[in-house]
Image 1 (cartoon, one colour):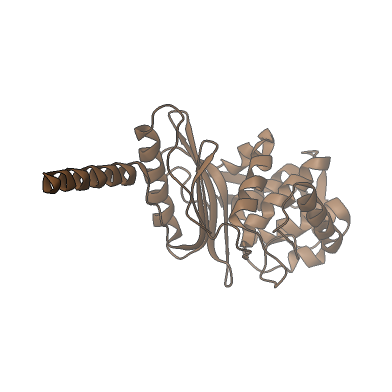
Image 2 (cartoon, rainbow, N blue to C red):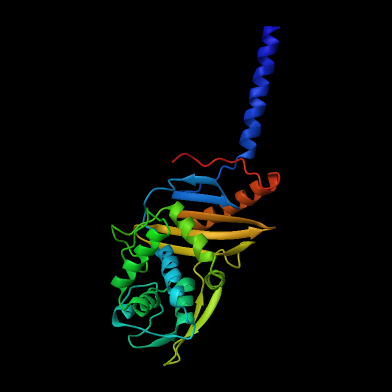
Length: 280
């Protein structure tokens, strides 16, 4: 009798463990830090509070500050410092001019560093002064594990953020309809206002136009940061946000992670999410 009860208890424990495992998604993307949010709930995080370089994801803060004085038809003049920035860039020449709307599109879609610094100069008079504004805004938003050392995201010891802070920044950026629309553009054409040079730019986010439900985001890459990505996709009213920092297999991992998240969401009753974030 005791043997039968023990066997039955073991079966119940096994079934309970199997059910729990079945309801919890196993994401585990190959990244130094990662985070997955379904709707409003974080269902996976790994090293999400670790301060790390985040490359051109930095440009989301730049875009947010530019919106403070946004005039799409304002003319931005390219400084010598902006023209001298290393790739990724458009190849703008010192003294060339471009409408603000197009300069910002080039910054977000192409991740163009010359356009990025031109915008910082336009906003604050110099990149140094603009970076001070970026850090002030980060403090105002409660991004206490974020610090900027330049406007575009180059490798510097005191330039960093975390997956959690990036999510908070993305939420503020996407609340602006102009920025949300720019981040969704798979391609954009911009031209200089004075010389008429035209640039056809493809979005660095390879998910756009390729992954079902992809809605935008921002990429980044430097030697120290490695491939980085924050991306949003939506299907059937379910929105998923993914952050990957230093992800060697960024695009396969992103697709797999989104697939798992949407599959998990369809298996849950209503808006209830039972998956637990991984310990930090």
